[in-house]
Length: 141
Image (cartoon, rainbow, N blue to C red; front, side):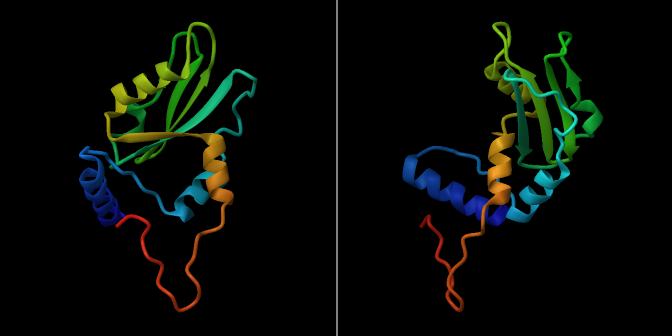
């Protein structure tokens, strides 16, 4: 996948003149993550939100990434060396931008974060396949 990401990055730079980091995961990896149900034990309220952050490269040991806010309304925990889960309870004091700033501070800028419901939808999706015997052409040229 790194070579595909690199090709996409160079084409984005050519098209828009910007350095945009691309982080990819195979559909099978997203399905495995969804099947693991990392948020199954979490309390669910109208104010709770669940996220998975994908790191471009494997990170430091998970124990150094783990974090719980003093108010216990924000939590970060490792899933694997390249994926981190986080939960937040929204309030007047705390919002998703607070979580995103903390994630970038702890993990660096080479990350992308997705809501858990997005992960579940991707995991349930069917792969886009070319007709039998035909090679699928990339969407970005």
